[in-house]
Length: 201
Image (cartoon, rainbow, N blue to C red; front, side):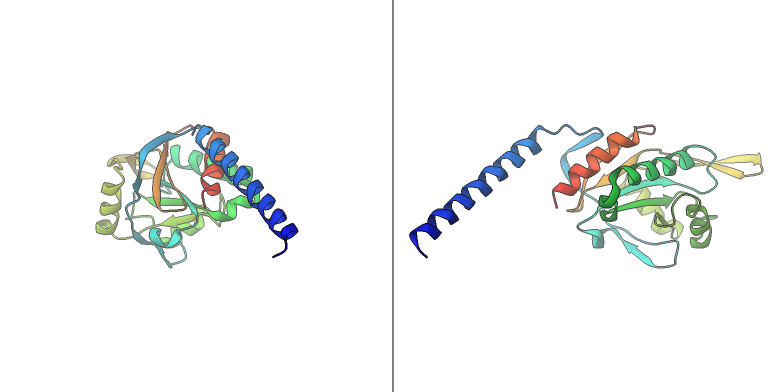
C-alpha cells in the first residue's frame, strides 16, 4: 500500500474508533425507563404454541427484542389495555418494530386455545404473538418468570376471572432478561428502552 493509502486508512480507522468511543460513552449514559435487572439474567427458555398452531421457542429469537406479557383473552381490563399499549409501542418504533416480538402468554389455558388467541389478537394486531400450551407446560413458564395467577369464581357473562401479574418483561437480542415494566408504564418510555436494546445487536 502506498504512503497515501496508509495515511487514508489510518484516518478512517481513527474516525471509526472515535465514533465507537462516542457510542460507547453515550450507551453508558443512557438511563433505562423500566425496572432494570442488574446484572442481566439469562431468560428462562420455553417452547409453546402460537395462535397459528406453530411452535414458538424463546431461544430461537436471538437478534430480536421480545416483550412478554402474561394475560388472557377474557380479561376485562388489564390485558386489553396492555395490548393497546403494545400497539402504541410498535407504532412509535416504526420500522424497528420488525425486530420486536410482542408476546402474550396465556394464564388461562382452559379457554385460550390457539384459535381463540388468534381471533382475539386480530382485534389489536394480527402480528402480535399469542402463546398457549398445556397446564404443565405453562406452569413451568409462570414459575420461571415469577407470575402470580389465581382463578376466581365469577357470575358474569365472562365466566370465571383470573387474577394475574400485570408487568411486561423485556428480553434483549442476546436472550438476556433485562427489564420489567409495571402496568401503566407510558408506551413512549418503553419504546425508548426497546430502541436502545436494539442498538446492542
